Length: 339
Image (cartoon, rainbow, N blue to C red; front, top):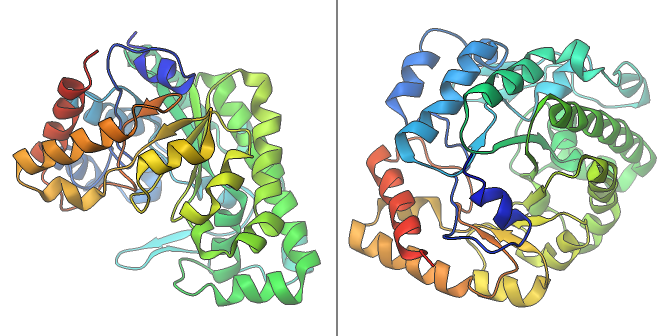
């Protein structure tokens, strides 16, 4: 087992900087497209054998140092009892958004083994195959709440912020229910065999710092606290969260994921003894190889003072990225970071 990723998460000395890529099992790979062409996205997420196949693809093709479970952050929300649909060109849709307490009361806190057992089976199967650590994950409560309130993706989050400001009691009630669901879901992933757990807060950056502190941070802190019993490294990624960095560090997470909007050296100075993950702009993979290598070298240099560093993109890899560019990035990180 190559445990370089786990060592970096814990701030231990490593022979080189490990790398994995957000959305590394995805549409930019022809091998993924071949599998995806046979089933809908939700069918893929709910078929363990296919999830195993696409999770393994980037490990074999790119040579990354960790695998991340193929699934979606919205899977546990569907398990709470709300219909979920995926539409080409539009993304996820919740046709029955949560608008009042009665809507919320209809949602359950699902038993993860009973309602999302396919996820746990995927993890068990992957552990038999993998020679690198497996990352399990979930969406952060605030990010998940936005989908339930907006009925899908949003650009301005009108309904979400309207509820926060005009009906905070309902909003907090929802956050508590999602938080409990998320904690149980991640604990089940740990029990099934996940070796690290990442919490994705994709929409945290739409919040003012004051609102993040009130409406989002306490729930992430609760989840991280409840996951301590697993002994696994916990990664918290607040996208577009450079203004929230110190508060993100207060979550208790072992690793903070960074987007590309901050110099990683500045982040090192601001967070202290917390490992960092990131933070190449995904579009920088389009650079000519010599410029890509130089860009990666600068990030590695700037991150030298970090308590631990896992190289990653600042967000998910774009679907039109040439796979050979992603493979080159992995090779450059390994080459340039050899101790």
